[in-house]
Length: 207
Image 1: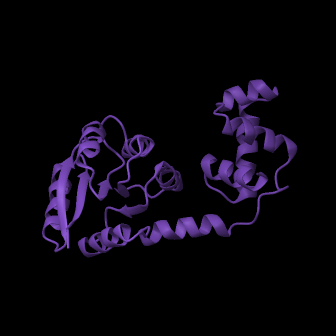
Image 2: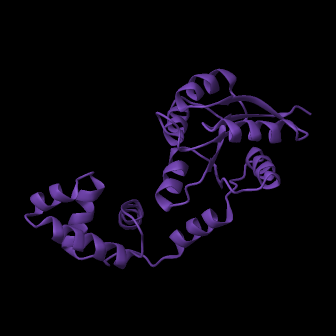
Image 3: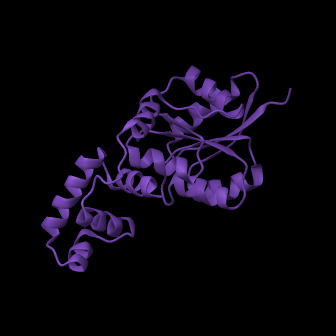
């Protein structure tokens, strides 16, 4: 049986070489290539076309998420698993939206990493336990329909369009402090922690 071909994108040399060692020492796997930046990876992965790629997020220059997004837009069929220290919801959902199929934290054990790669290759979506719980929680919160006031919905709508707090205030003829109060109330009512969750939850339900 052919080996599962894996590439690694990680800017810290010790971690990168450690991951390469783990992959190469596991029967049925081969580390095809390893890169220290998204720029190198975009070119290399396009040429290498591995089966799987372990991708760090915090890279010098472009981020790992941007690299995944560009490769997927170019038609890449590589399966990506993010490997990072970041576990906040914004990072998780941004990575998954970009095209990652798995999300592992860097405290994951070598055995679990290999198990996750096998799962990914078989069509699964491996997640660290804390990440999986965040995703489950996001779907278990109450529906957002009719929760917000008209003004709060206006504020969130402008936030979704990329307006800054000051710009929202000018547009609605209210102070920046009032904008912040509205956003605080929006987060409380929708039971979310950040703007991305609020936008996805409210407008997802509306649509």
